[in-house]
Length: 45
Image (cartoon, rainbow, N blue to C red; front, side, top):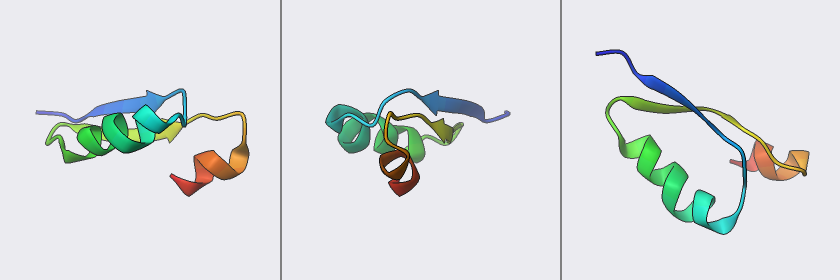
């Protein structure tokens, strides 16, 4: 089965602490892009 590539449109705490880590654990998920108003925050993830 192919992986689903996700893009996240926030660097809010719920995303960085719960949503993104859960996606990274998924066998068929990969986080491909992260958007933020601050470039540094997006790059840090």
